[in-house]
Image 1 (cartoon, rainbow, N blue to C red):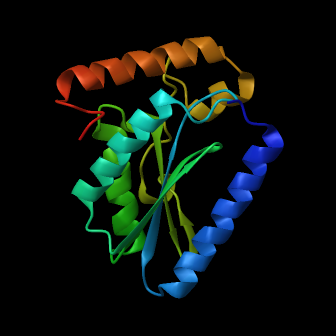
Image 2: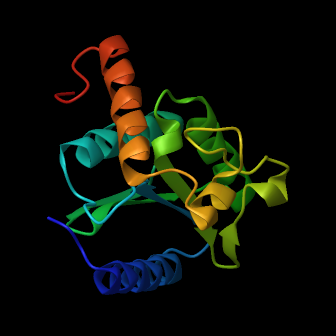
Image 3: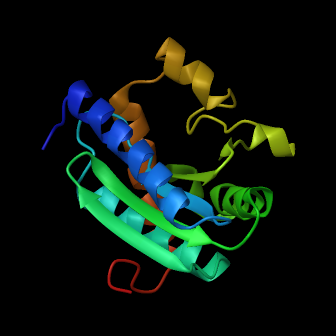
Length: 172
C-alpha cells in the first residue's frame, strides 16, 4: 500500500523520538537503527521484508545486541539494536555490513549515541554510491537521475542474486 509524504515524515519523527527514548533509558549504549532503502511510495512489500530479514540477520551476526526491537510498519521496516560498543566502533561495523553484504547497499544502518548520529564520512568512509551509476547516491537522488522503475528493477536483481547464493533466505 502506498504511503504519503506526510506519513513518511511522521514516521521519521516517531523514529527519532524513539531513538532518543531508547538512548535515555540505556545510557552509555550505542543505538543501531536499520531501515530499508526502497524508492517510491510503497515501503512495505515482499521485497522490503526480504531485505529487512537479511539485515536483521547480518546485524545479529556482526553484533551482540543487548536489546532489539523490530517494527513492521506500513511506512517501512525498522529495527532498533542497542550495543555496548562505542558509536565509532558500531558505525565501522555497520559500514562493513552496508559495504560488503550482497544486499547491504539496500539497508540503511544508522548509529546514534547520546551525542548524536555517527556519520560514515566522519570515520573516513566514502559516501554511498548510486545503485545504477558511479555517482554518489545523494547527487542522483537530488537530480532524479534514474527512474523509480530502473531503481526497483536493480533492487529486485540484487535480491534475486542474493537469494540464489543464500540457502532459504526468506525462511531462515
